Image (cartoon, rainbow, N blue to C red; front, side):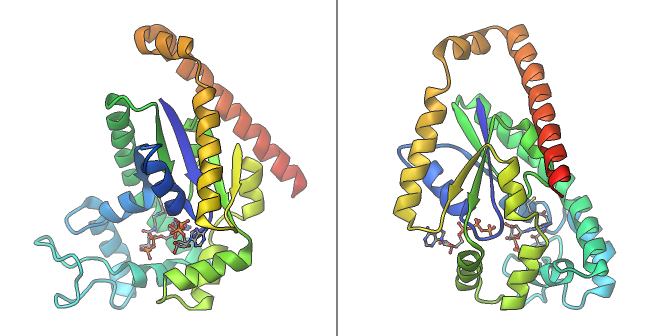
Length: 260
Ligand SMILES: CC(C)(COP(=O)(O)OP(=O)(O)OC[C@H]1O[C@@H](n2cnc3c(N)ncnc32)[C@H](O)[C@@H]1O)[C@@H](O)C(=O)NCCC(=O)NCCS
Ligand SMILES: Nc1ncnc2c1ncn2[C@@H]1O[C@H](COP(=O)(O)OP(=O)(O)OP(=O)(O)O)[C@@H](O)[C@H]1O
């Protein structure tokens, strides 16, 4: 099964691309890291307890009051993600420390949940699955993907779409969220395929259709049959390919370092 690592900065169109890939004629399973990150911090989970223990005493209104809680639970009040986002996204040293702590709590749980969904997609016999992960390169999850697909927009379109979608964010909030991610230029250097999404959704659908066709054509029936029936070959190919991906990523990191 081909793992397609889908990434991009905030509001560049990952969910829109995911929707295209999930619907006819592609019908691919989508493993959405944002959705999983929300699920693993619900009341009663270990990540919830760790976040409350670390942030609640210094973050007013971190937890919803019972009458405002959008997802009431018998395990306790939900975390107000808007409030937590305001606490951790930003350029100050305190923000950097906070996001590190939050990532350290949430990311291992998300990775475990992702692995479970990948196995489920594979058992269901899909030819490919999409890992929709905003922090694919930052978390080095690209190493596990057969191909990485970056969705990009120009900065002006990105801010305009972000503010139109998330009306509660101010222009300053938007800039802070964008600033807490790797730059688009760097992501472009790390991605295998780049799709530019400054145009219409219809134009995006055509681009994605071309990308899927290329991926399908690249999968020879002979190797697919050998991999499906001969486990030692499958194991050897996976190890070989992981090593290749790791080396490719190292080369790209070195190039980026040289370019400063
Ligand atoms: C801070 C939180 C509570 C804010 O929740 P909120 O619902 O307001 O935003 P949401 O989760 O939908 O994220 C929107 C976008 O923000 C960006 N973003 C989210 N987390 C991070 C992060 N740790 N670093 C940089 N950008 C991030 C991504 O582009 C994401 O698509 C939430 O984003 C979170 O728990 N983040 C830490 C976990 C994480 O890294 N999630 C990203 C996928 S693993
Ligand atoms: N080509 C397009 N034309 C017009 N609007 C678009 C286009 N692509 C995406 N949008 C809109 O831009 C907003 C951001 O897109 P989307 O939610 O897909 O981005 P995202 O990368 O998944 O965001 P996030 O990082 O926050 O999860 C949405 O409101 C979406 O409907």
